[in-house]
Picture 1 (cartoon, rainbow, N blue to C red):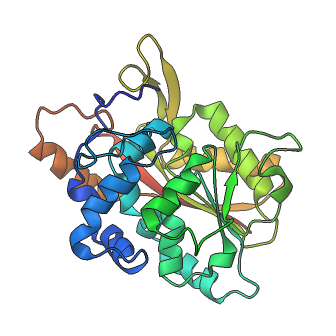
Picture 2 (picture 1 turned 180 degrees about the vertical axis):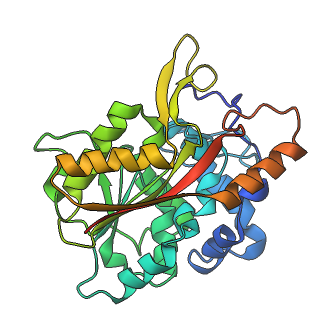
Length: 309
């Protein structure tokens, strides 16, 4: 994918992407003074030097090295500061489970990026020893420590792995069947139908088979399910890629089919995030004429849980 900053989802300033919850996390968990929060995000996320990136003007917005790890829309738009998991309608129930279950439920944040959702859980009282994050890009471990200022407090909680790697040396393979909760935020929708099915099957193999074991997450969907062909600027010039956008029915069907193939009875709950839809429409109305690649009257964000029963 192009790392050009001339993309619809790359914004130079935080704006409304810095939510009260995101600000509070950096102030209370990371110890950043309120007046320095925005500068800290720009400096530490953008000036992360995994690629020895050293911009000449360090006062400029410097998300660029995190962008160089991979140009995810959630990085370009600062959406990681929304702390997506905490927006989920089941968040409080999940938090209670993590805080009270003995022994603690093992929790995996798949596609963890900076591990921001893990730190939010810790700030809200979840036991750090029960939490792990995993990502394909190992550089995000250090980037998360830079952003959250906790290199000494949250160590050895990062698993570098490719979900689709089933080899004996695969980073997640040896953890199969051990996770009580797996979180997947803004992950499935980057794939076509067949690859999503494969991802769901791999996730269920990682999940404990005990009743109550759960997959929780958020994905971008649509009221009109179907293939979506991505063209530039969403992909590199000269390329096309097809992804699948679910509605409530197709998302449920997919998990039911995968569960049946795995011999599991699953309870699937999926709802549209109506609040996010209202906010998106209001923002688009204010920015009339601006091209927004992730927009349209049918687009919806989906909250879901998939529980073994």
